[in-house]
Length: 528
Image (cartoon, rainbow, N blue to C red; front, side, top):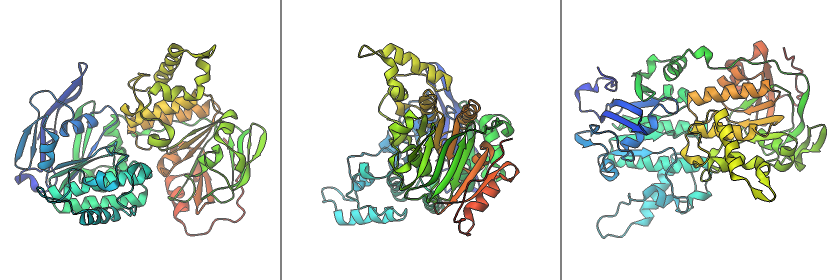
C-alpha cells in the first residue's frame, strides 16, 4: 500500500469519503509537498500532524482551492472526482467544509451572518425566515455553551467564542452536506471544557458518516480523538497508521525524526538572589498569593482552568489590576494595585501573553514593527526614525531566534504560529529583561518550534533571567521547570521541586479536593 492510502476499519471496499492523489507543490523552486496522497474512509477521524514547514498547511490550502499544485493532482469526494485546484464552491457542494486556523470571520458582521453567509435556507426568491434562522444558529452555538445573541458583532467576542463561531459554521456545513470536514488547529483558544464539547460534536459527525481531517499541534488531543494519524515531514508522508498503535513519544519521534529524549533541554542551576517578590498578591482569581522568583530560575504555575494560574503573569506585570498585596522589583517595594506595564517594563519585566491574535502581536503590522516596538527609541536620531538601522536590528533578532522567513517586512499574520511566537519571544528578549513572564508560551505551535522555544527559555534562565511560566501543560512544566507551584480556587495548594516534581504529582495536586492551606508561605527550595 502506497503512503497516503491507509484507511481504518473495514471500509476499504466502499468508495472513500476523500482520496487526494499526487499532491505536489513548490515555492521559488523549493519543493514543499512531494507527491502526497491521502485517503479517508467514511466516518473516519484522521489526524494530520507535522512541525511547521512539513507541508500540512500547503496540503490544506490545495484541498480548499487556494493553492495551485503541480499538474496531475486529483481529489475524489465520494463518487465525484476533481482535478486540482478546484473551485471552492464546487468542493463545498460536494461535501468538503473547512474551519481554518485564522477562522475566516468578518469581525464587523454579526454572529448570524458569519455562520450562515451563503448558507441561508431560503429558496429562490422566497424571503429569509429570520426567526427560524436565528433559532438554528442559537441551537448550534448552545451546543458549545455560547450564549451570545446572534446579532452580536464578532469583534466584540472573546477569542474562545470567535473560535466556536467558526467551528459552528463548519459543523453546520458538515451536517448539511455530509462528506468531509477539515479542522485546522480548532482548539488553539479553547478551554478544556470547550475541547470536550468540540470532540463530542466531531464524534457525533463521524458516527453519522462524515470523515474528519483534524490538524493539531496538541498531540494528546490527536491521540485521544483520532482513529488514524498521518505524519508529514519535509513535504513527505513519513508515517500513517492507527492512532491506538502510537504513544505520544513515538509520535513526536516521527514528527521530529529524532529521539524524544532530546526534546527537553538540560537545566542549569538557579541562583540564590531574589529578582521578584510578590507578597499576598490578589486579583479576580488569585487570592493572597506569595511567591519568590530567583535569578536563573524557571518556575511553573499551573492548575485547573480558572484556578488563577492564568491570571498571575498579568498581575505581576501590571497588565491586570491587583486588589491587594505588594511586589518588590529592583530593590523597591510597590503596592500591587499601583503596578502598571510601563513601570514594570522599566524595572526589567517582560510579559509575553498567550493570545497572539489580540494581545502579544499586532497581526496586520509587519514583523519589523512588532519586534522593534519595545526598543523603538534606539532607532531615533535627531527626531527621525532610522528605518535601515531598525530593519537591520530586527533581521538580527529573527536570525538569532530562527524565525522563518527572516523577513522584517512580512506581515506578522503571514508567519506560522511557531514562527510568530519565536519572533515575539525575541522581541522581548532583546530588552534584556530580569524577569520573563510567559503565559502558555507554546500554545498553537508545532512540536519543532516548541522544542526551540524550550531551549530559548532554558538559555534565558542560564543567562540569569528569572522565568515564570503559567501553563496548563503539566508534562512540559515537569520537565522544564526548577519548581512548579499548583493553584486551586485561586490559592496555592502545593509546590513541587526535585524528586517530587513529575506530571503525576502536579496533576494530583491540581485535582485534589482538599482546601488550600490558609496561611501558605513559599517553601525554601534548595537550588542544587
